[in-house]
Length: 172
Image (cartoon, rainbow, N blue to C red; front, side, top):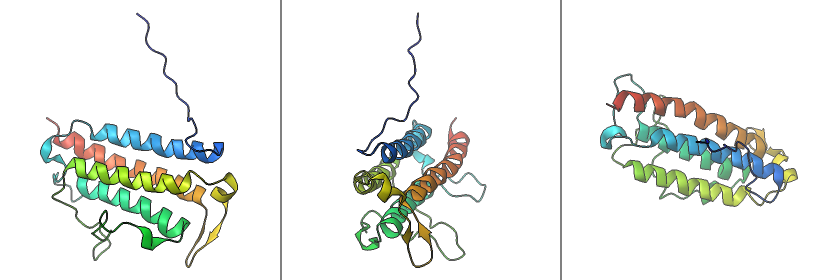
């Protein structure tokens, strides 16, 4: 029996090939994150594994909020367009810790991730590579959309380590 051949490439998901490959990488990271979340027990989203770290729900909320904030606030300079119904809780509490987000199902968290991703892809897909790499001067920083996408990839991978640790602790 022959094993199917894997195809490991980043097929562009935007008209501009370069922008499309960066966005394909962003999507690949999300597929891997969702794979970590597959088959979690019902109580795992809010499980406290006793290590003083964040829960799965808190981590997923943070990943989605940071994603939309970087793109809408920093790249597009349109913070007012971030949907308040998706993000009713501030990212951090006093002391700099992530705001606890509890009481939502994994389905709700995954839907927030999905809606957030659809919103940012809708904004980034039409960009040319020139627009994607353009340095935007903001109040505290200068940045490009390409750097933001790189940062979002790195950010999600870092938090996926936490998600995998919780998954390992709560699975029988």
